[in-house]
Length: 427
Ligand code: AMP
Ligand code: GLY
Image 1 (spheres, rainbow, N blue to C red):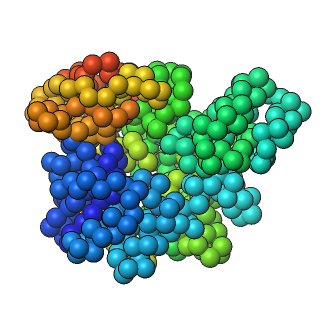
Image 2 (spheres, rainbow, N blue to C red; image 1 turned 180 degrees about the vertical axis):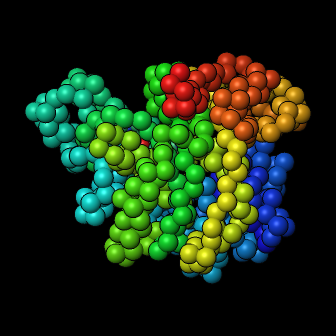
Image 3 (tube, rainbow, N blue to C red; image 1 turned 30 degrees about the vertical axis):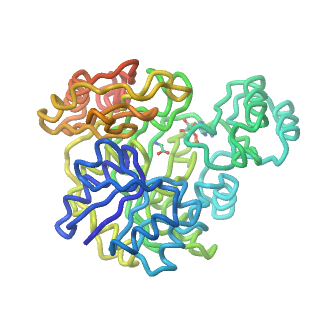
C-alpha cells in the first residue's frame, strides 16, 4: 500500500517511522515532512493545510491511505474532502473534529451526555467574562474556544491573573479562536493522556502516556505544545483505565454517533485524575505530540491494522498488543520557545545518537539546509526517544541520548518521567 502522512512534526515522524514497518506498506510519503522524516518517507513540499494540493497529490500518486497528523486540516474538513473523492483517510470529519476545534462544543457534548469534566461558563464578550471573574474570584482557568496550538489555556491562581488572561484574549492575538471565552473550574490532580482508536462505534484505548506541558522543570513556566512524554503512565491504574473507558471514551463515541457525527480516528482525552476520579480537561482529534512519540514505539501490532479498521468500521475485529518496554521522549526546544526563537542553528551529534541502541531522534522542527546540514526550523526541534525495560533505566538512557545532541541556545526539561518514579517508589 502507498501511504501519505500529512504533517511535519515529531508526531508525524513517529507515525511515518512506524507505518513504514508495516508488512503491507510499500511506500510512504510525508507532506511536508521535515529534516528527519526523509529517512523513512519521501517528503513532498505541500503544506499540511493545503487541502486542494494534498488531494491532487493523493489522486495523482494513487495513495491508498492518508493519515492526518495535525488538527488544523481536520478542523478544516480534509477528511470530508478526501472521502468525497473516494480516497481512504484516517481522521475524524470536520463535524466530529469539533471536539477539539471548539471547546464550547466539547463542553456541550460532555454536559449533555454526563461525561465528567470541569464545571464551566462560556462568554461571547470579554466584558461579561470579566464581570463573572470579579463575582466569583479564586483560582480558575481561562480558555479560548478555538484552536491555539496548546497555548490557549491560562490556569490562573486568582482574580487578577484571570482578568489579565481575558485582556490578552481580548487583544485579538488568538484571532477568531478567541471570539468565545471559557472560564473553567480549576481541577487539581495529576494529568494523563489517553488516546483511543475509534471507528465511529467501537473504541480501543492505546496505552497511557503523560505529557509535560509547561516549558520548565517542576511544571513551571508557560504552557507549550508539550516538552516530553513517557508511556505508560503509572498514575493510570487498571481500575482507572476501566473507569476512563466506561465513563469517558465509550460515552463520547456514543454521544458523537447520537449527534449525527460519528467519531472516526484517534480520540485523545486529556485528563485530570482528581480525587473524585478522572475528568476531561480537553479532547483532541488526533495523536498527541509528543505522546505519539512515547506510545507508538511500544505498539507490537502492525500499525496499519487498527488504522484501516477505523476507516472500514471493523475495529471490533482488532486486538492491540503492546511491548512491555517503557518509552520516554525528551523534547529539545529552541531558546525562547514558546515565545519568539531563532531558527537555522546547525544540530550536532545526531550521528552519535544513531549508534545508540533503542534510541531514536524524532525530528520536529528541523530541515536540511543548502549545505546538507540538519538545522533547527521550529520551536520544538527534536524528540529524543528511547525504550527500555524499566522506566528508571529508560529515563537515564534517554538523557544520555540528549547529551549527545546540541544546537545553539537549545533547552530541554530535565525532569521528564519524574512523576512516574514517584508512583513507583515514592521518590
Ligand atoms: P488545554 O489547552 O485545555 O489542554 O489546557 C492546557 C493545560 O492547561 C492542561 O494540560 C492543564 O495543564 C491546564 N488546564 C486546562 N484546563 C484546566 C482545568 N480546568 N484545571 C486545571 N488545569 C487545567
Ligand atoms: N501534547 C499535547 C497535544 O498534542 O495537544
